[in-house]
Length: 212
Image (tube, rainbow, N blue to C red):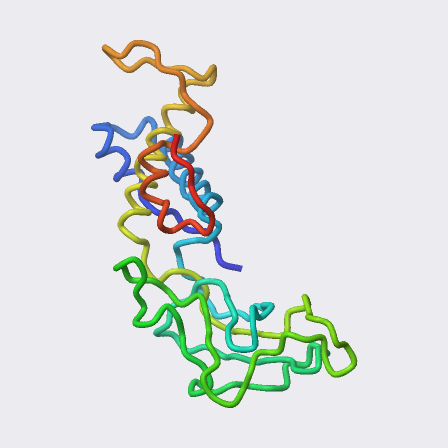
């Protein structure tokens, strides 16, 4: 199992806050890791790549397409289906049987990993429960082996991690929920993503991110 990776370093956060010295490094590291996992939670995906390939199973949305987790389209994958619903995965697809989407590895004008396969030849993704079951299946009948995740951390995710880590670090130092910010006086620390971090991660979230 791949260990989750952070999206920025404590040096990045120190630079953003004009901090020097090492006395707060442990708290900063905790804030960086917490911010990175919070971004994963809000986006419902992660932005690092697994160390090794692994097999995952999916339910096809139609006979022509299956949505899957993110993976690097430049890496080799193995696609298998289970037409009779016995979890035997006895039908192996070739790279000519499907196309990776989004096309050209781009979405919203930005580099994007593959998260959907589309059938383009004579094979179809099974969506029924096998020959003896005549209702649409909710059992996964598509198996994909890939190096899951993003090959590179997007710039917006990096910046969101820096912003959120700084906010989390301030919250750690303010256990009662308020902190002092110079001329601004006492400011209440809210239990949510920093608004600027929310804006940055919005295009990458599988669900809508509401900015307050």
